[in-house]
Image 1 (cartoon, each protein chain N blue to C red):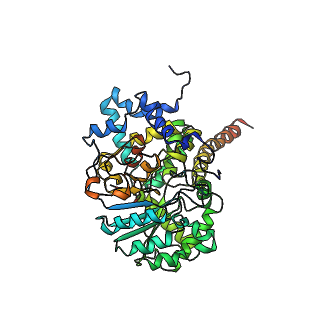
Image 2 (cartoon, helix red, strand yellow):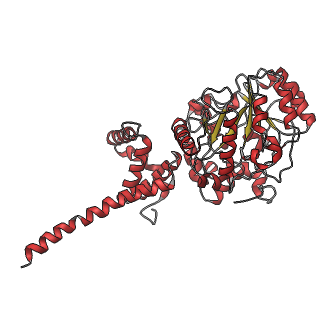
Length: 351
Length: 111
């Protein structure tokens, strides 16, 4: 298990240009597989245009207490990119005026941003319908100062979305690090104890499943059933929904695919599973992603590849929702990850 | 030509068999797809049966395909190995039950 980010290891994939060269090269350059653009053209869906903005996703920093093998953010304790209070203030102005019904805070571990609690408190005043925090669960157990997070989340009626790669210890720890499974179980029990995830509770607790390896997620409903049964029987844990998310071939997951000689097979699997119906609802059509330093992206993945929105407006400081809705979405071959099978988004399947 | 009878990349080309016999190929893949749908047995159970049979018929393509299918369904390695043993037990049982034939013949030929 690696303990440092690609960046700290000076891995060549820390450079987004290298990643894009790989995604544009080999099987695609040789014509074995079609470019994503060609596939969209085939079904008359190019250029990909956004619909009405529904979700504003803000990445408050890449620092994290974990170094997961598949992380598309290349997050870890060594990452110092953290959103400042000034940028948060700019975000708050946007949150007050946006037409989006969902605010989605992510990271890294968003809770590690020193202004996280202040930001949540201020943002909650905007009366957003669905206020999500993506919490990795172990952060709640990482340090005493985080032990009260379940109560904090409850106070602001936060919708907690947490990663849980499997309901068995071995698979979870292999992807996320030793001890992650046990800490996650305790954290889930604590969230349940304050009312999160209980069958009739308004305190929403959803889990995110993403495959721990070079394969696609299976049927979301079937996986949810298995997770619910196992977590209830073994640990008396309740949660609401399971989101099955496909790993996109970028950053640390791309590094893993190449090192394990699975890259070509994985791209074949993604292209074979291409589903035009998933393109219809792919998350970049209703989401905007804001980086720690205020730049705007079509999604969190484009953020990590440094592909900013193709619009005159590309920073939170000169945000203009109607102008942004006229843009064309930046695509590359990683996009096949969101259009495979039932589709994949931060909210799970899209069909 | 490849210098090996089995090439993992050939699995992706399985669908091409239809090109040389459209009617039979299409009928086969329709049937195949239907068999693995959710039914009286769950798709998960059928995936494990397929994995066990894949080992018994010693089909490397099928082993690759149903190991991956199992992973996608969240099937654990312990469940997969038990399925392989179930197949292996039937296969060895099928050999050993012929031991009765050997015993019968032995007894018949012996004074």
